[in-house]
Structures are given as structure tokens and as C-alpha cells.
Length: 414
Image (cartoon, rainbow, N blue to C red):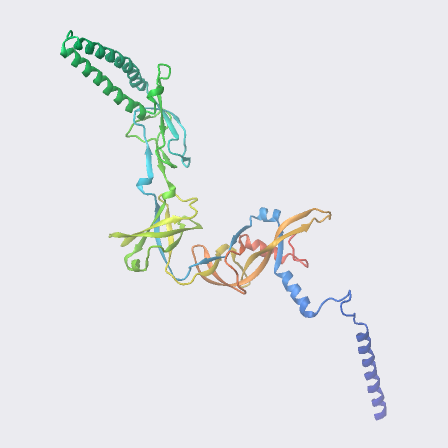
């Protein structure tokens, strides 16, 4: 019995040895065409495929994906305050006509940008012709008065004429010249060049021009309405002088310094962040709101900002800035947070082959930890360092995430 068991064990051992020898003998040589890589290499390749996806230009446009960048933001050591946008009165102007008349044409609308001297409207009044006629008549009267003065001077030198006649001629000429000078000023205010005036160029309509460079904020007149100095035609605002008046509580004033940066959003449209810089701290206290006005200069882009808008601002109180991204750039999936980096451009062949390619962008998914948030931004801690300015998806991130889940074996969205 013992001998039988020994034989059976020996047979099993020999069979196992032959099997092992066969497998070793049939392994492909190093560098051969059938090497599928080590397990670690295969795992890394699969990991890279799962975390990247390519979208064509057509897909990017259809879904409305927008690219922004990673930024440095002060989101922790900050103070929030409300305020409003203001343009100083020295940078505002009413467009008025110095002479009363009926609005004949109106050449601007609210929102139009105008240059100094640009036509805003034309005003018509038949009485405008009268000073032009008088100016032309004065030229003839002055010419006659000069001739009369010369005649009286000749008579006076010959002791023929009376001295009082000479004096009267001098006074008459001076009066006419004074009136002409007055009319010249009046005509220039009307926008008429006296030197070019003739009986064929008399005008009953005057051009009302813009006194400053600016944007039309209001239009008060309409065609056919009567206007004069007391009734403005339009209001202009010079938006380049736009300031931010921030209302800060008295207890927070010691934290404010000239030169501090302020991120702010329009209260009713918080999707875009603007930047301002403190240039003056007010000295008057508002007893009703218990605040002091902090005057700030808006720097950079002013698109969409209008005088009088209410804003919400965040004052940078110092400390280190954090790497931050817009809130819409972060995707929450199964309790984890991701952003999508633009890792390069790619060309993908058409499904039917050929030489033509579809251009697109390749995106890489990166897990992040969320930090402080404010003004539409969230501080993040990525799994590896991200340089500020790195392009990322800021709108449509969830679509990219969904496409990444549909990519299959090749890691591309189709």
C-alpha cells in the first residue's frame, strides 16, 4: 500500500514539472513582437486612458465649453462689503443747446460711445438766421463807416469840417466793430464760422455737439420736442473714470490700506469678477449706515459696468493667496471633486478613414480638495502642483466628465 502511494505522488510531481518546463520554454523572447508589457506598465496605461478624453472643436462649440485658467485668489483673509459704482460729476455732462429750437434730428441712442465734438442732434429755429443776416449787414456798415471816418479826417485836416463830426464818425465805427465782435462770438457758439458766412450759406438749423468723450447714458429729447439751455437733450458718462465706493463699517477701517486689491461682482449678476484698488479712505462718517466710504479705482476690464450699479466686494486683508478656480470648473462625482486640465491639442481621423482629421482638445481629469470659497471662486488643493495660468474647463466641466465615462477603450469622446 505504501509503495502504491509513493508511485502516485511521484507521478503527480513529474507531471507538474513538465507543465512548468513547457510554460517557461514558450515565453516570448525579450523585445519580441508579442510582449504586452509588465503588469505595472499595463496598469499605468489603463490609468492614463481613464483620466483623459478628447473632444472635437464641433463638440466644444455645440456644448458651449469655455476655457479659463487656474488663478491665485485671496479667499480666506478677506472682508466683504457692499457698495456702488460711481462716475464723478467732473466726468459727466448734459448735452444742451445754447439756443432754443425744435429737435430736427437725433443721432444717438443709449449705450452709444461718442467723441468730443461729435454731432448729437440738430435743432431748428428760423430765428437763427437773424444774427447771421445782421453780421453780413454789419460788414457793409463798417465799410461805409470807415469811408466816412476817412472823409471827416480829410475835412478836419483842411479846417473845413467840424470837429464834432469827426468824433461822431469815430464813435460810430467803434460801435459797429464792437457789435461785429459780439456777433462773431455768438455765431461761433452756434457752430457757425463767421469767415465762411455768406448770403448763400445762411442756416436755420444748428448742430448740437458732444462736450466730452463718453457713453450716452440717457436720452431726454425726441424729434419734434422743443429744447433750450434748461432742457438737456442727452446725458453722457465717461466710464473710464468709473470708481467704486465701498461702504465699510467703522470697526473695519483699520484693516483698510491704500493700494489694497478688491475683487467685486455686480450684485444682480455675480458671474463675472472685477478688480479695483483702494486709492482713498473717506473722512466722513455716515450716521445712518454706520459706514465710511472707501474710494477705489476700477482697474482692468470694465465691460458691463455702469454708473450706479450695486456691487458686493471682498477686500484682501493680506496673507497668502490660494490656488483657486471658478466654481463651475469643479465637478462633484461620488463625493470626490475633479477639475479638467487642457493637456494639449489633438487631431482625430474621421470614422470613414482618409487623410482629413478633426481638430480638438485633450483634457485630463485631476482630483482636488476644496477649500475656502467666495465671489464665484473656490480654493483647491490638487493631487499634484498646478501652475497658475494653467488652462482648465470653466464651463461645461460636467459634460467633459460624462464623456470621459463614455470613452470606452480608446479614451476619446465620439
